[in-house]
Length: 102
Length: 512
Image 1 (cartoon, rainbow over the protein chains, first blue to last red):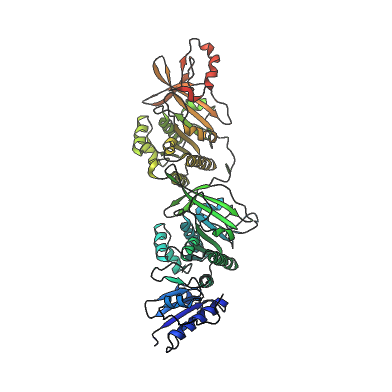
Image 2: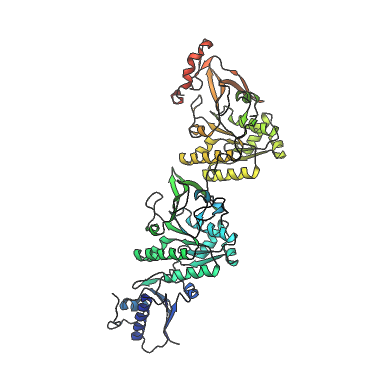
């Protein structure tokens, strides 16, 4: 079992969902290069029951399930430094996403 | 759902036991969202709970989306008010969407966001439960958690759109800072403003005064202005509205006896069955005695009488009645008399009115005596008192109950009480009891000032009170200026016609 698990709640295939997933994947790839299956993406439109369970209000939402304690970050995760800080990961050395949202 | 006699533009959902249907002219617009604004403690959440409970009892499931209080808190608070949410949940008639903020799970904001997660949960809850009613409590809290106001407004607007697409009837609550200030703290109504209702809990002369007002109901008829309301344990919000019509079965020409033969004669044969009489007099002039006679007169005719006393205790009233020769304990045992004594300060005027209505509904009296209105007047601001009087008299008339209300004049010798100023247009009969000082002696005078729809004796009669009760004697022939509170003896009684003008002296000029 990997030491980390991030659950990403998105709403359908919106640009915001896409940006969030990309940002999170890029950060995790840079910070945890040796871990596999660290990110679980859940579409709240398909699994509203899981959204209910996790108490999701705003989306996108990433929940750090492991390691404890859980941490939650809301938004399209467009700021990699703040995202890394919020999730307790190492900050990337350089800009990790070529398609930074404007 | 409401069963309407007349077709309306928009079907309504009844808020049955709240009494708000009258204010809303039928209920909440079906399939629409109504914003309920109010300050903290104005009863917004309670209204939401009532709305869903009522639906659940009729087999219409509901979804409660809470941002503020946790479902556990809501269950507990609702139980204290007499609503069993857990029971409804077990029956599948109530579903929570818990959107409260867990302080242990702080959410950091990184980048732009929407409320699709919440929307999906609400939609899911509505579909799974088959809900037709939704409550969202409250919009304001969302903004304290998500400070990006434009985003939140946009997302809440989407939420309302989703609710409309789901064809649910919804109540959305929203905070405001002042009872009479800007509509809401966050400008939330601007985009869901089809229907806006305001609950107020304003401080008026050191008393809390709760009201409800419908600001708008798009495409629907509704009443305008503020209506008093109260929040009762076991029931929640109860709005106090007027009876829709003065009397449903029309006025009656049946006359009933006051209980005092001489007074009946003065009134041209008694009072009409559905009339309201006001007896005004200074302390000790015999108002409570008249109440006793009025009730006893009813019992003698086999009618049911109800005395609501706000001044004397039940046992005091019974003891005094026995002293005047009326066996009240026996009357009470026979079921034809009920005496209810309440301290005026026990509850607010709105609560009193609701309680009085309940007693009347339950006991179904033919006669009602309230002793005294002045005792009630001192516990509330003038505005509350006026709406209380209107609410009470309209209810009495609708029930076709003969009523005797008493009011205490502030001065011994004459003058009117402020109660009279409020009530004189609402009453059909006004009887004045006055002290009269003649030749260094205090005597008592009594006159019928007004009797709607009938002729009456306009003279001022002397009366006295002894161990057997009240005795009305001959009119004063030799005294003028009694009403003005400055009686003086006339040397030549024939000249009294000239003194008539003094009857019209302003009561304020008495100087007593």
